[in-house]
Length: 247
Ligand SMILES: Nc1ncnc2c1ncn2[C@@H]1O[C@H](COP(=O)(O)OP(=O)(O)OP(=O)(O)O)[C@@H](O)[C@H]1O
Ligand SMILES: [Mg+2]
Image (cartoon, rainbow, N blue to C red; front, side, top):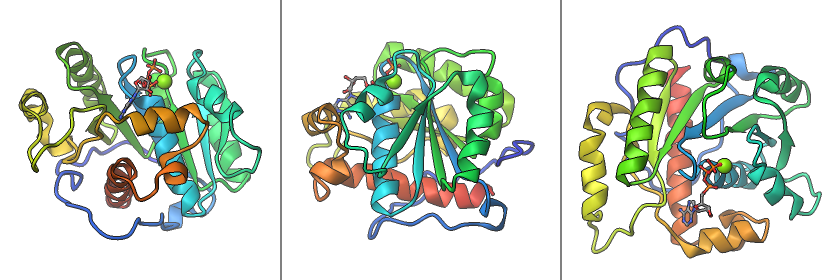
């Protein structure tokens, strides 16, 4: 697990225009008995649960054993999981934020290679320890003024912890003729101070995502060749590269 004592200054997350196959996670030496941990943070409704589900779906497609820890009293991921068959492809477990460390340790003993933590939209007394045990935190931001304000607050808090993180814009307006929507460009300007950590891609608002999640599925199951899955796979590839880089 990440000791979180040094924060890398130059991030590769905004340098790699990922194309080609979806990358598997390598078991680095310090990851032989403990899972990689990704933690989703951000304002209410910023796409944390949706992104946790899609990243877990990609991990599962790659035959990685993946567990989503649902720490949000709203239990969005747990409700989604209850719609799925018990085939073990994606496991989820609801727990209190203060129990995350114990659950991650247990997940390692059970052979999980990846734990994705879906956090509630507000900080708790356990938020600091969750950030420290996470290999990488993702701050999800929607391109709207109200979301940016809260996103900047999460950025400033995570900067103070010195823990590695990236900022991902989700539910964004569609790219047309290769151009990001004006408000997406304004969002990048608003986040310019964190340009090193801002993911170069975007997750576009798509009804296919809503429909897929509503069926208890992931895009890798319902539309693996579609543009939505492609965006999440690009994010996955860049996160894997970042995880290996911050180790
Ligand atoms: N890329 C997207 N395309 C379409 N709908 C999306 C997308 N991302 C999120 N949504 C929808 O936006 C709503 C909020 O998403 P989600 O529940 O993932 O956010 P959250 O950050 O987990 O919210 P909360 O803080 O309440 O837990 C949901 O209805 C979800 O289906
Ligand atoms: Mg949620």
